[in-house]
Length: 414
Ligand SMILES: *Cc1c(COP(=O)(O)O)cnc(C)c1O
Image (cartoon, rainbow, N blue to C red; front, side, top):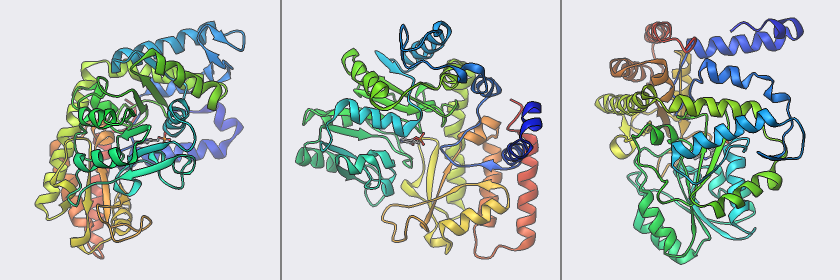
């Protein structure tokens, strides 16, 4: 991707962006929340739509000159509604966290009770964790997972009955099993609470038809657009009813934000078009196939996989039996060009800064075209490298193999 103007004006940033491009080309990301946006998405992001102010919504803007932006935003909205099967869609939230903040603002008063998944169990900061706005301004009560790493729906039902929240949140950042949205609906209904399905991680699987959709059950669906959906950074907030939709729109603007990021909206429209193809469906299916094979191959090498496997794009490895910490494994894999992230495991006795596990996911490598055969290669590299003090020759061989894979499956051009 040549950046001639940038090079002339700011060679330092041009150099660093080139370095980051090369880093992405020459490493494999197994971080489940990362992906590789298409050239089409990147072009829309780098467009002059970033110059335009358009506070408000289509047809009701606070600035002139929005005829074209209205058409872009309307296309993004129509595509989102069709793709997820909802009555209403807002495409203006800057990212997932502000999108969740908008949902809180739309549906709750400060101090109201929210029940969401705890961060160390696999939830998100914005699901009520204490350092986040969601845990500071609301009365957040958290659920976790059982000792095997599964959601315990009976326990969540009891918690909700006891705490009587106004909002129940389902969805996670580190949960490898299908989420039962119907059960969450019943749980929310038991106390008349709203249900928010935060499908940030799995939305690509949902629109690809390989994970059940929350659309029949959730009052609000929030998803980021840059994870398995493979678009630009951004978020969609979708509502089942027009009534909730109006509240969401007011919360996003003027409640929380000013002008929308129109270049981002254009890129979201592009990614939704890309997601509406048979190629995307096949990609979604392969993400899960790859994750299942990678997990089972690792299990064959005596790695302990939380819940014993996966039904989606990711899984957690508990490294305790390997005598290696999550940080040590992350560092060792990084030296051979495999990028993962350390993560807490259920009942982790260690701290979040130095946890016992790794979180591993396949969206990015699947986008590059890696197959189940390559997952076997990756499992064998992870097995060789994730030991105390790996041998130099072992590291060298692993790095060579990763380099070959990177060359065979470039991140760009695509
Ligand atoms: C990533 C994520 C978010 C937040 O998205 P950002 O764009 O990083 O703010 C919210 N909820 C879940 C479940 C996520 O995985």
